[in-house]
Length: 118
Image (cartoon, rainbow, N blue to C red):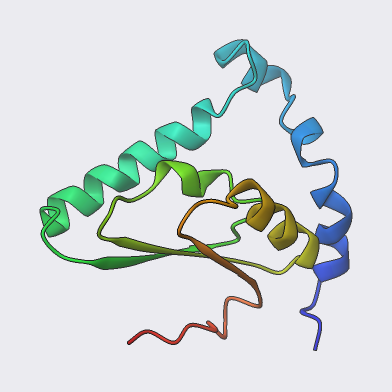
């Protein structure tokens, strides 16, 4: 079954980078880089480090992963990272962008997490 709203987000996937050219974003980051994504990831990495001291393996789930830009800034060698999004096309792009990374992306709804942790 195709998740509700999937088609709307599929259309957005091919133009995702164009949507990042917001005037406020350009004021903060002239090169239109991943500034805001990095700031969010830095905060989450600090929370992970303070909660687990880097000694435990943890699983991070990015619900609404989009095209997977956030994932390259999260975690470390003890972190399993999953990205979930409604859009098949977004997940396709995320897998392509993160081709050589140890991350998993899947299309599904957030209410039913399709993860099988062992």
